[in-house]
Every structure is written in C-alpha cells, then in structure tokens.
Length: 296
Image (cartoon, rainbow, N blue to C red; front, side):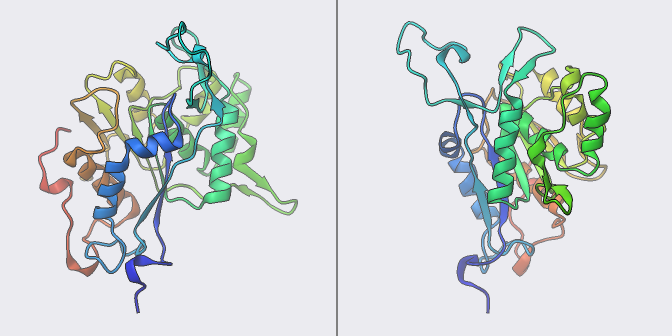
C-alpha cells in the first residue's frame, strides 16, 4: 500500500544556492512561488502526476554561504548610514574591475557546499541564482568523474587545486563526497573561464545536463558572461530534438519563479534530465513546456 502523501518515500532533492548578498532563508522566501509550483508539478504519491522515480515529491534545501559580507563588499551600500555588517552572504568575493576577475574565498564557499552535500545529501540536482548559478556549474563539474585530474593538469598553468572536501579519504578508499548530479540549473549565472585559476571547472566541458535562464535586460551579469557558462557545457543549448537548455526571459537580474511559462520550461528540463519524458504516473500529464508558446 502506498504511503500517504509520499511519506517515507524517495523525494526529488534539489540544492538551492543563493546569490551574492543573499542568504538561504532570504532565497527561500524569494522562491516560494517556485517551490509551490514544483510541488504541484511533481507531487507526492498518490496525487496524479507524481514522478515514478520520486514518489515522495520534491524537496528543496537552502544553505547559507559562509562568507558574511561587510558593507564595503556590497555595491551601492549606504556607507554613511549603519556601519554594522548586514545579514548578507556570499560564496566568494569578486576582486578586480574587469575580466579576468579573481574570486577571493572561493575555497571557503566550495567547502561549505561540500559539507552540505556530505551531511544533508544525497541530492539529485542543484539550482543557483547569480553567484549561486556560477557555483551550481562549478559543483556539477567537481562531482563528475575525472575532474580531479583536470585540476591537476591545470595547476601547471596556474590553476587552483582541486577542492579538498570534494574528495573523501577513509584510509581504505578515496572517493567523491557525493555522486554526480543528474542536473544543474543557472539563473543569471556566469562562467569564470577567462581566469586560468578556474579553467579546470570548464575544461573538459561540463557533462552534467544544465539549463540556463538569462534575463534580456539583466544589467548585473552581462549576457556574454552567462553565455560562457552555456558554452562550457556539453549540449549547452539543448540536445537535438530535446528541450531547450537556454531560456531567455524579458526581465532583469531575478529568478522568474512566478512566471508560468518559465517554470514549465524548468520542469520540462528536469523531466528530460531524469529520464521521465514519456508521461507520468497514474496516466495524467501535467502542463509542461510542450503545451505553451515559449520565448526561447
């Protein structure tokens, strides 16, 4: 007999990585509409439409980055006002006025993510916004087979070392901290490939299926920076005959969590990535990207 409302059953678990100056709770508050929509699209058994692989529904996890920002780290902060550090966090702090940027504290940020993967996983996918979108691509890359060797090879050309906590050494066996992810999603994210320090994240290309959402009037992250991440992914714009993995929305630097057509595009991508594109359990097909006119 099926558990009521998917209780005790396997859930589709997604790691949510916030943007610069945000926190886990703030990102959660800003994406409540997305969480509600995904709960409806991927419900728990016995509701019609549940995923066969994940009859427990969907679960989102929102960690907070480890670097608490000083007011001087936040562009546009009123330095003549309150000098107390705001409740704002980052996975790293960008240094430099132009490309190639350097990202101070990246090792600390990636260590926090590795700890979440180890202590709160396993996760099936990752969704990130802005700096979190960039981090989502990095995390997907780090969990892929042979990525450690790419970092070792890149170190001779000035690349950073492979983040230690993404490898666990029990004394008997050395293995990744977490299995490869099934999918990754970036909203207003970017690639850091112009700096040799970070090239091993992107060379060889990221094989994990990754979907990219870009605002057409985003003035915070330039389109060219976002497209660097797209082009660093295998099938970055989508597989032939598959759903689009590059989605433009007519907005700025935000996650369009309450816009129906973009949530549908996300759901269609997730279905493709986990291999459930041939319909859903109980014979009911939910509304998806194929039913809508999408501005891809």
